[in-house]
Length: 467
Image (cartoon, rainbow, N blue to C red; front, side):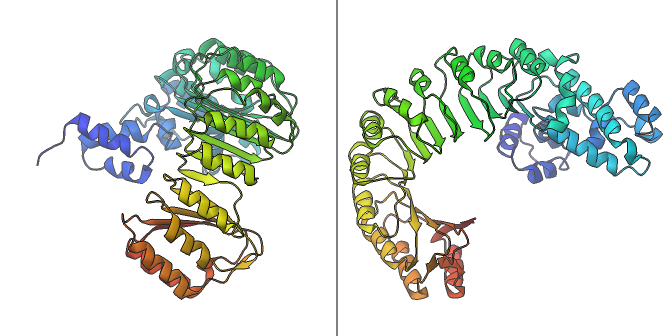
């Protein structure tokens, strides 16, 4: 039988990186397939029995003396050096999975469980730091994991962490963690930080030394301290950011620093008060030549500031999301954002004339979200979509308010789907429903059968129900 060369198989298996079930099956085809697929399958730790089998003999003997493993475990040697394949490390998951592993051992005393967890975790982390060639992604959140912070000083840790590209963490990890990383990791590309009440010294150092930060997600918890020092540290990094996600909640985050990052492709802002948006006046005249996604949750900038921003930056926008709109802003969207693919403006089923305007004028529109309220039939909405939507359109998102009830009749639903089937060019329809404890169009039994029928016919690409 003809055998595909290694580089072809590797390219195929790379496409399956997120499909653990299929990759696992590839391990058992033959030795050749196993040797190639195992390196991708084990980028994430898959089995803690296997990891313990990979420990050096002195570590196994230490665990045996503590009666954590049996003598049989000492003599086990794995087929591959599995730790060397790992690219993703979650300290919290290691603690959790080791706890599960130990609870399954009949000879373990639960009274000493925490001591055993710490001991086994330490041995595992020593192994990983010494064997992993280049860690790409690190997660470190849970307080119960903080005792393992010393892993960054284990032999091999500097070499292992120097090419770290993704870091997900809380702000209250002990200072030595951030200070140590700031000495080693200068090329983090994705940084996701949840800011707690305590903001540890050293975090600003870590941010300031980054040379190629592309994605930044800042999330402030309700009890978070002022993060202006963190924002100041951001002004010291190069203009490399392409994605920025700021969740301030009730807190104030100065926004003027954003003006430095003119290469941004995506901006997401979430604030539950307007204080931070006062800084938006310093952004309204800044040109973000590559901006494609603008998402503003909850509160939003003053109308005149946002319209001015869209006048300068709307042409390249492909996705725009805002909770609150008005006639002036809607006219500005149509005028300044002609290339939008995805749109949500808080549009409701009572504003169907506005829906017509969007569908008629945004000729590249693919998806729109509608807020559904009260007792109503989606028939008129569907009729407008069939008559006015551009050829590119294929996705409707219906966000039903609490206690809303759909009175759409089965014959009305089927009429819409028949009309959609006959559209030229043919494009499968995608329907996404946010039910919010409402009575939605898919809860009618006859409608369910119609939807099932048209999914089987390929007219409906998918029906997704979200809570």
